[in-house]
Amino acid sequence: MQLTTYIADLLYRYECVIIPGFGAFLTRYKSAHIDDTSNTFHPPSKIVSFNKQLQANDGLFANYVASVEKCSYETALQQIRNFTAQISKELSEGKTVTFNNIGAFSLNEEKSLQFEPLQQQNFSTSAFGLSSFVSPKISREVYKETVEALEEKAPIHFTPERREAKPYLKYAAIAVIALSAIGFGSLKLYENQVQKFNLAERQKANSLVENQIQEATFVIENPLPVLRLQLPKHAGMYHIVAGAYREEDNATKRLEQLREKGYAPLKMEPTRYGLYQVLYASFEDRMEALRKLHEIQRTENADAWLLVQEIQ
Image 1: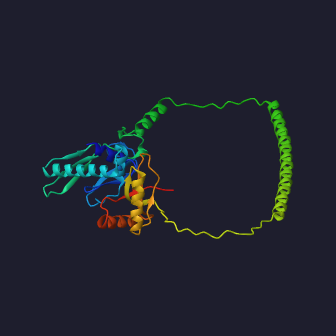
Image 2: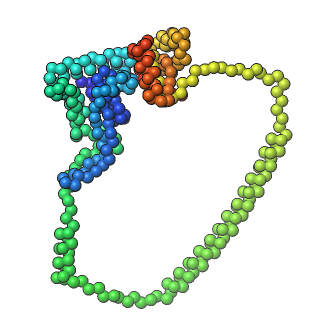
Image 3: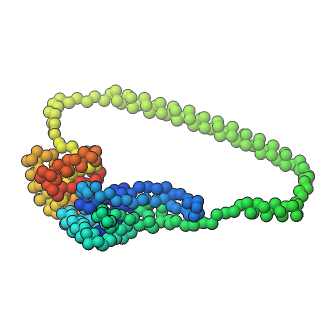
């Protein structure tokens, strides 16, 4: 199933990937750790779980499928519906459905959905492709006892050696210190002169600017009337999309239809695939955006979806 590959791609980037009408894959970060019992080193990872209760379409999966397959959003959504219908059919027949590189689904005796994640797969990019490995425990006490036994058999004696003092080195060191002190004093004097010069030039420049500002006058004889425009403001990164259109004229018509219904819609710039997206509204809070999305899907547009993106 090609769509399972797209799900795996999104799990590397996001903590929640919702499959509309089926459920959601959730990831939880787990830091690197060591298993003392088996001497196994584990890299940082993301643990994958599944929640069947989260089935509302947030637009993330469908939008990604549309961008990869280079098709419209509606076509991608239909592919996902066919995908989930096939999975439900196979599960009802008692089969185990495997998602490549993610895990396997099955029904238990009570017909409840069970998910078994693939333990070898790591969706954490901070692991840099590292896998778990086993390292034997280092036994330091054995080496310590061996060294102590050798020292008892063959003790090592250190004999201090006196070195002859060389008086000319003392005079050379005094000369180096004197030259360093002279050089440091000259450098400090030069720095003070440079700072005084920079301060004087800065004061001259400030006086010249103040004089020019005081001499300048601005007179407006006939001021223009104030023009006030009321423009719809779309702030936040959660946007409810009414549709994505290949032709700009169709997007403009949809924009006018939403205006007549009392919305303050916005037509976005074309995506890299040439699609013009028309927005109902934008929100800064995710839960508020989801509530409005469910209201629009229930009352007038079942195919509306949520776009998570920063817009200018």
